[in-house]
Image (cartoon, rainbow, N blue to C red; front, side, top):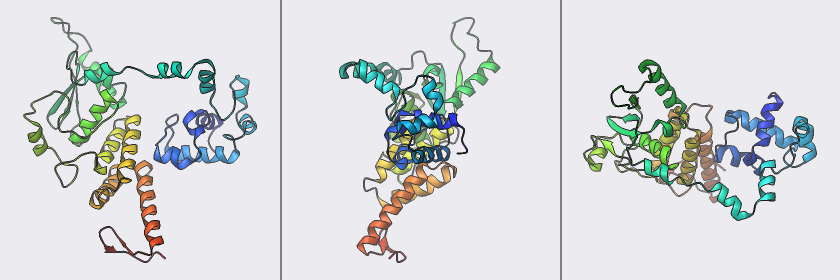
Length: 315
């Protein structure tokens, strides 16, 4: 195995990976990230570990990772963390520990109080909070740090206010940007033409007229897979891995729910032009769907796909 033991150990100790039996379900469908490894690297390590039987046999895991036993970590299919929690806590206590009230965070999305950062998307301004946005996006955080260095990061001598911070998304799609900003505060997103309180926005309808559409139609909602592709690409660009995983899940769900053919085909082109070749999340989902479609029609003995257009014989 080319990867060092510490990297293989990081994958082995990931609780989500150890519970799954299918590499495809773990890596492709759920876009799992371990220690910021590339997807290709993660797949190779998983293939190796599964081949060695480390997820099935504690003895194989002990042989592969002797330092874990020396450190007193229990080696087995179930992670030590889960064993400890389930052994000492009741189900209600465990649920109470994992349930966190984030209503204050969601409420801050519509409240400009204490805002110290302006996000701009095609002239549309969002008054947000660095303490919420920067920990989620290293790219935006880096820009704010640069402004700290150039502005001195000092408070206003007369009013005590923080210096103004500003980030422009430039040519990034405004609807995808809106979804990204929703995620900062709600950890979810949905298609909308009006989200937080913004400056210089006359009306929702007017905003749609000047916005760059995500497809040939003006009315874009969550049923358009191309929306989730653009959110996925934006999440990759700004280093928001959890949003990237969410967008991939939404994309998979959308294309599996009888999406219209022209919407799906438009999303295919977008996926391949907006992501690098090494990023396999969207590409593998599309390839898998095409394979399922071809297999289905082959078994039915049909030779037409996508609106009745003739295709080559597959039998």
